[in-house]
Structures are given as structure tokens and as C-alpha cells.
Image (tube, rainbow, N blue to C red; front, top):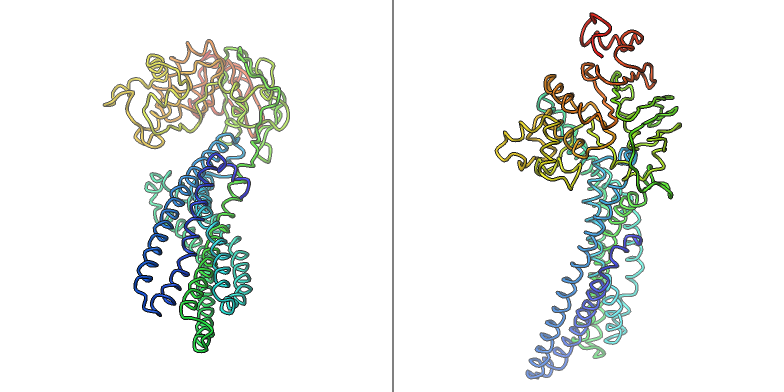
Length: 576
């Protein structure tokens, strides 16, 4: 947990004041039993009512001072711990944003949500407890033992035999609890993943009447977490009853020995009361230690999971001498590119897209079309070969600079909570309202937007749930177009719109595409008939390349795709 304490450093003053105020409360607590002894031995025994009243008032004053210290400690500790948690959560979030696609594929969304929320909260609560208890516990333990010896060394010795079994019990609990709580957090990952998948795909679940199946999946994950949580809590629950048993044994021993000493006149009743109080304070502080250690054990499991993220290195990193300024003309070349997520998905791909060309990419599902275009903005790095823009390897360009020159509408149209204009502006935050509307018009989105009650200021639900699939795709295209990029990538981004709207989008894009190199991944062959170059991908290989005219004659795979969608061509020159 030590590496994470750097996030507490900005709040060191708060973290210092809190323990100092706790010292004040501890000192006041340690003085109370001696005051009580004075009341019993000197006030009540001798019938001195004035001394009883005077000492009682002193105890009240000490209690008030201790309360001020305790409350002040809590206030400053809460501020320090929660600011620490905020900064840590922010650091984890920023780290996630910096990770590459491959890192995110490995970690999974459910795990990331759990680590950003539950794991950070566990660590934050331990910091809060530490600032309040970490000072109080040792001071109370040492102070109570010293005060007990000063009061009666004979009775105080009763506490010493209790220390070894207490230490053994705490060691056992902590040793057993850590791996168990790590498993609990991992099962919580699974629960969150199932919940996220279910809520994200609730329409599919209902459409296919799969509620019972999903309830079963959730129930299985939920029960697994319950079983592991119970097992962890059973281990940690041992601490309290064992501590209370030892405490009561100690108190019984003090009363037995002390009672005999009172009869013999070697001790007073006040001394017995004071020693029992100190013994109770000392053992109660041990109970606090056990609670802190258990929470620390759980937080340690969370710390390991947080550090896994913070220590992760993005698989895609900028080179030290990466270009920080880049204004491409748009010549994109693949040179013997091989790529895979394990097994090769793309194999020895080579082609050149000249500036201003429209390049269409066709192929069966799973052939590697999306993987190919993901290499251009460097979402992934090639396994071998290279991808260049204007002759410069994309790995030699800073990622942010490279991606700022590329407009992309991905296969899944992802929108965010906020207004329609805010979603379109994500492609260019400085764009004014006219530029936003121009991009929407080119994406054939303006008509449906202005028909909405609040137009461009209409607020979207999570992931654009209040829009149709085609509307979301058009907004995604508008977001890519507003950047007016030299390179444009449309990854099957019109699959949810009708043929007429798609045709209108293509016509509107024609003027824009004259100035930029465009890559269009499509399932409909009608989308790509007028492309300057068509690439046909099959099982990771580039099996054909050319215009519609040449491919309809030379490529059996392309002709098969054409015939399956549009029927037998009347002439091989049907489209230019």
C-alpha cells in the first residue's frame, strides 16, 4: 500500500493534524481512571463530598477536551482520506484512459469498474481508520499499561500473559484473511461484469426471452461472491469473541487477586477500579488493532488490484523522438503487414492508398477488415511489416498527433450522455454551431435532429438509448466529419441506415472525400461500387485489389459477393 500513499502527500497537513488531535483525546482518556480512583479512595471512602464534586468537574472538563480532540481528528482525517481517495480514483481513471486497446481487452470493463469504485473505497476507508486509530491504539496500549503499573504493578502483571495469545490470534486472522478477500474482490468483478452485460443488452435479453437465463448467470455469480464473502467473514469474525474472552479472563483475574489484596489492606478499591479500566482500555485497543488489520488485509487485496492498473504499461507507446507535428497529404501504405491478437488475423498485407482516394474494404465476417483499419490510427501495432502515412511509419508519430489527423466512425456507434451538439463536437471541441450543423447535414442527421423538440440541445440517454441505430450511426459519422480530416475511416458505419439514406450520405461525402483519403469498410457492395480502389480480404489475406470494373472480371470472391447482393451483372461496366 506504500506506493499509493504518494496521493496523500498533498494533504500532509490534514494527515498530521488529525493524529495530533487524537493524542489530545488519548491523554484525556488516560487521566480519567486516576480521577475515578481519587473519587473512590479519597472522596467516597472519607466522605469528602467537596473532593468528589471537584474531581467530577475535572473529569467533565477532561471529557470535553477529549471530545474536541476526537471530533477534530475525525474532521481532519475525513478530509485527508476522502481527498486521497478522489486523487487516487482520478489517477486510476487517467491511467485507464492512457492504456491501449490490447490492455483494455485484457482487463475487461467489469474489472475496471470494480477497481475504480469498490477497490478505491476500500483503500480510502483504511486510510481514514489509520489516521484515527493508528495513533490512538499504540498510545492507549502503552499508556494504559504504564498507568496500570503506576497504579498497581501487582495487578498490571495480569495483562502480560494475555499478550502472546492475542498476537498469535491476530497473526492467524491476517494471514488467512488476505487471500480470501482477494478472491472476494475477484468475484465482485464477475458480478459487475454480468450486471453490465445484462443492462447493456437488456433489449436483446427481453427480445429473446432470456430473462431466466440471465437471472441464472447473475445468481451463480452472486452466490459465488456470497460464499467467498462468508468464508472471509467467518475467519475475521473469530477475532472479536476471542478478544472479549481474553479481556474477561483478565478482568476476572484482576478482581480475584485485587479482592484478596483489598481484604489484606495492600490495595484500595479505587486502585482496582483504575487498573480494570486501564486493562479494558488496553484490550479494547487490541480489538481496534484487529479490526484495522482485517480492514488492512482487505485493502491490501484492493491495493494489489489498483497497482496492477497503475503499473500497467500501454502496449502502444510513443517513441522518445516521435513527431509532435504532422500534417499529412494522406498517402497511406501497408507494407507486408502481419497482425494478430495471438494467432495472425492479417497476413502479409500490402497496398497503397494515394492522397484523395476512396478505398473500400470488403470481406466476409471475421476476415480482418476492422483489424486492418485499426492499424492506421495505431489502436494496435503491427506484428511485422509497417503502416506508413506519407512515407512515415505511424510508430514514429505521437499518438495524439496521429489521431488528430484522422476522422473515424467505428463499427459500434458509441454516444455519451449529454446533448447532441456536445456529442458531435467531440470530434472538434472548438467547432461553432454552424460547423456542427454542416457536419450533421453531410451525415444526413440534420433533418431528424431539428425535428426533435430541443433540436441540437436534445439530451441523449446513456449510450444514446433514446435514438435509433441509424440515427446513432449518423451522429457518429458527423463526429468524424466535423474534424475535416485528411484521412477518414468509416468502419461499417452505415449498416443501420436504409439504402436511400446511405446513398444520400455517400453523395454528401463525395465533395469532402475529394480532399481526403477515405477508407470505407462495408457489408453492402452498393456502398463501394464507386470507390477508387476496392480491397477484398479473405481469411486475413488480401486476395484482390482494384476497381469495380476490374474486380467483377478478375475476382471470383468479389463477383460472388456482388451476385449475392445485387444479382447477375448485366454488363461488367455497370458502375464506374
